[in-house]
Length: 385
Ligand SMILES: [Zn+2]
Image (cartoon, rainbow, N blue to C red; front, side):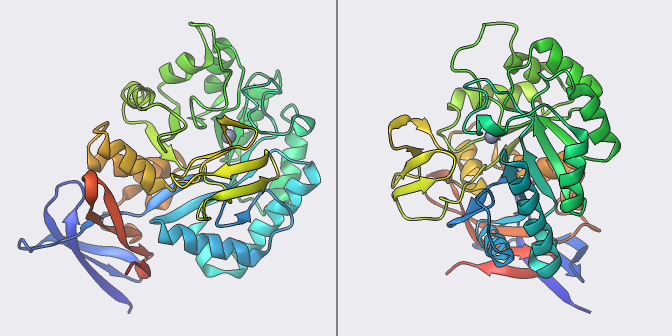
């Protein structure tokens, strides 16, 4: 029987503990005597929005099944043990082909099957308005269409688990009810919906906000508006990009306080993450520039962001180093909470009976955490130098 034992400092209690797992499942956790230089031990990170990584783009067809495995290993290297490849607005046939490739990758590679908790379909049922639409192609934006969605879901072998849509369409509430009946989580995003339409979508079963505060108009009526309404809806989990570029720190802080335990992080990383600084061509935004500091912007307008290139742990570190939340909460926001929002098996975190998905972290410079090792279902899948 495959057994593994890890010793570290519990990320919540800060007490030294030993965790034992059999066949990938945690069987014992107990306190041990104080030791020097113990690393923090925390649940593996869960990223609900991964567009690609290291040159692999889940939104440029074709990509190979092997490249999905490559991204899975890159995620492990970032401390992410569970993620949702994210397919955005595109030509309907291309969306179908991309989810087929993702589903095949799950079948072919055990590493992918273990780590990919589902597919996130971000679009094409979004706002057509400039601003909320962000970089999604106007030509492919459409009203929610259950028959069309079913076609993609079938192609994906039922793996679409999360869908981002805008409730501004008259068809939205019926579509949301059908998703809920099929156990698909509906997230509100890229929206120009009225406060009443947001409230109605929540009533119909929408349960999340996609990167709240991004993919919006540059100017909004002071109140009511779709940001206040989503913040006030207690049933909505709030996903945020905490790379320090997409949202000012004060906004992150206020969103977290308002959501009272339902705030969480996504990376929204793109294929340019993990690449050297330089100029790149992006299928959605034309020419983009990646700076040495990790900012991805449009070449013709550096004020506009062209996506994210920072992993989820970077978001955790942004919150910790700026004292927005304590370390344990920052980690929960990038692990247990996203797992809870989708009702995934890893939602228990480090607990007896839960899968041993864990990361070991060292306190580094400037109160930040550095990843030392990653464990997936009880196996060490990555270790740094
Ligand atoms: Zn988006």
